[in-house]
Length: 303
Figure 1 (cartoon, one colour):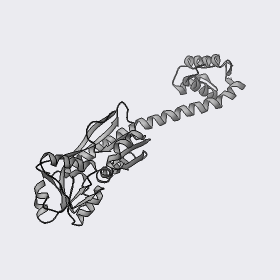
Figure 2: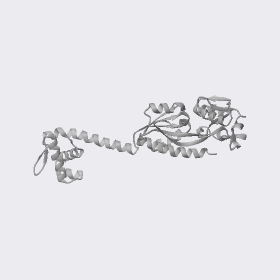
Figure 3: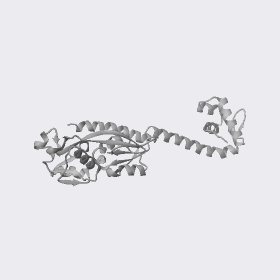
């Protein structure tokens, strides 16, 4: 038995109007089409739904029983249609994603604020994790995507660079440092420095690049979290060695980034997605705002 929504709408319309003519008019179909839909439904259900006369259409006891069930089914169908339309237009739904801790702190607050303003009814589930945990957590969770820094190719993942930042010396906007446009790694070595610990990916990248250039980094302090390095720099304990993109100007207005040269090292912030998986409309909307916001934010960090 294949009862259709068109048949149920015709049945409910005739039941309420007690007239095939009026029901057809309200449904925007012809009287003959409405009659045919009722006949098809009666045939499929095996019961008579209406007693017809020249003056009126009266529901049978079977119709009385069927109407309430038909009304629930139509309400459910209409509710489903509205929900799918809201999801398709990103007016409702949920977006779950992962972000490396540094990216979550430095880059995503502005993205989140703009997304919330544009899509107030979408639930956001952002999970900030250590940078080295980003890929394993992405593979093991229900997150639709991840934002952070990764290296090389990753099986069953697509990687899209969102922004790239030069490894920079970050210091207070005072004195000689504020007047500099860049520093070499040799010049940096004459200053107290704050670097990420050796086991972090960013430090591994730095050590590898410097090793290739015949140089070595010997920092004054080593830390695990980017915010720790920036807070220490703000207190004048040394120059932090980080990508310029990791300096949130709103949080640390007294600090400035100056590119490090000889060698110049860049580090990308990327969008990670599972291959062959379509993002939900809510996730697509978030990614679109992230691309635009991060591009603008990146322009502001350029020296």
